[in-house]
Amino acid sequence: MATRKLTHVDKAGRPAMVDISAKAVTSREAVAECRVRFPAAVAAALRKAGMATAKGAVVDTAIIAGTMAVKRTHELVPFCHPLPIEGCRFDVAWTGEAVLRIECGVRTTHRTGVEMEALTGATVAALVVYDMCKALSHAIVLGPAKVVAKRGGKRDFGGARA
Image 1 (cartoon, rainbow, N blue to C red):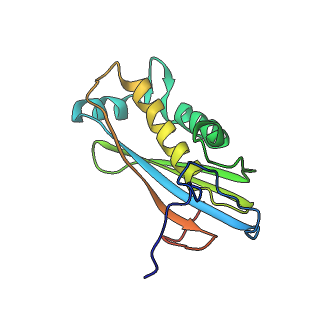
Image 2 (cartoon, rainbow, N blue to C red):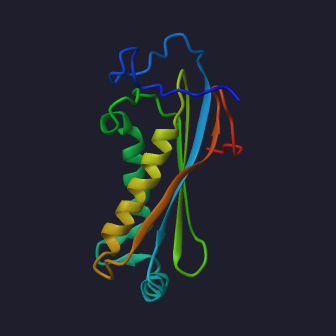
């Protein structure tokens, strides 16, 4: 296996944005997820209330915020390139009695991938769920957050379906 090296440093070891000008423009997709773990009583109350709190519709608000975050990732993460986002989708579902899985899929046609955008969308959506539910409990736990699939570029894994 070839030795991998960090990409966001220059020859002198200083922080640097990656020069993508020589890369091919290709279709790129990434899917990331973040889980939200609730205390059992809070999860039961949310299910009974149809995932609504006094602040509004939890899932719908999280999807809107996550989508906004995807489009602004380059403003939040210093070395991300601004990308034309061609597609962004969310899938939010309970996995078990007390864990909400938030999946964010992102697509673009560009010289670099959208893993950071997918991670940003999933985690910001999870943060919004926490914010909207924290009046019920501060024992809500976020994570793990991870990339579950990527397609396009040098390495594919997980069968991206953004």
